Amino acid sequence: MQNEESLEPSINSSFCVLRSAFLVLVISFTGSAAAETIADQIIQRELAGSQAYDTLSYLTDNIGQRLSGSKGAAAAVKWTTDRFRSWGVPVTTEKVMVPHWVRGAEEARLVSHMDQKIVLTALGGSVATSMMGLTADVVEVNSFDELKALGAKAKGKIVFYNNPMDMDLVRAHRGFEAYGKAVAFRSSGPSRAAEYGAVAALIRSVGSASLRTTHTGALRYDPNQPKIPAAAMTAEDAMLVDRLLKKGERVRMHLLLTPRILPDVESANVIAELRGSEKPEEIVVIGGHLDSWDLGTGAIDDGSGVAMVMETMRLLKEMNLTPKRTIRCVLFMNEENGSNGGRAYFANHKNDKHVAAIESDSGVAAPTGFRTTLKGDALTALERRAEPLAAIGAAKFETTRETGADTSFLIEAGVPGFSFVPEPLHYFDYHHTPADTLDKVDPKELAQDSAAVAALTWILAN
Image (cartoon, rainbow, N blue to C red):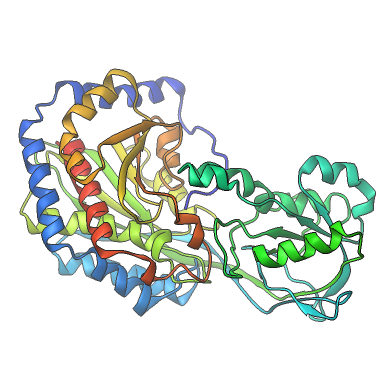
């Protein structure tokens, strides 16, 4: 799923304007009747004989966890490359150096309250405690302002950020907005706590549901502050600690985390292409990220996105369809804890003539449409040409500034961006947790999602 790392534009502003304007011209002046007819056929063909679930099944059940640097990640690169070749789709790999962080022991107990076990998981990239662990009082804050007010009182303590997702936003189908607000304490909370002398940082797991499930995710250490261990407690355990502290009781915790940060590992982006017949130098990129967190098997984040874009390539090849523009599928490596795959792709291909970039990294559920950086006349023109998507409920386009983490480097450079949006109501029930497994995926919805991505890809490429 999209991370929170800020990005700097990589090329001059005039070039960005030209790139942004390019698709406006493409959409406005390219004939589309044939493309729309074929888009209808693509949707019907995919709904009748999708193989996306088979792809996702192997990726999750046979390969499993795919955290960058792991054996699973390496196996996923090889298997997806071989799979493209078996379909007759030209494919290659491009080197990406990725971090190699390995989860270790994760234990916590309340020594102040009968040694009650606390269920938690280390945040991605966390440093370890000593092998004996650490024991300290817990102090709770609900904002960075409260942390600042606490000041020196945080020294030697475990700082606990108690910030649940806003469930009103989740129920209003604005889960990504709710997630963005709560996840700030995961990404920068540990360093902010270290600034005041804290010995460790804890957050409430950022999720919309919990059966005492933990929710991991990457943190970002401030290089100017000490690195302290950091973990996410389950919602239930976070509420327990909160209740005890609100009663005015002293809460003292023993915490043991033994993750390891190993040397970077060579991995790869997987890149497959269907070359265009009339304008092969113009490229429509479609992508998802091949890596996953190590708690579950990455079915919704982002095995489903990988399956959708792979299925797009398989389907178009099976239907013997040749697009006017080149369609390039990129399976990015290392979105979860570094975005090195997206960064490497941009470095290698920033001079290619990209006319659109579609990213699928928002899970799998009934399709609702797409977010896009297009607006105004360009968006209106596209909406007319994308009417076939209405058959599967995917014809809604919402203008946003950002459309994905891995393609963000292209978007910052002015390439029009798109991200596929399945119904988000339950996405954060499972995202980054041990419950992110294949059984959460409805094969029929995955087929509908794949049809939406394939149809829009065809429309943009023609």
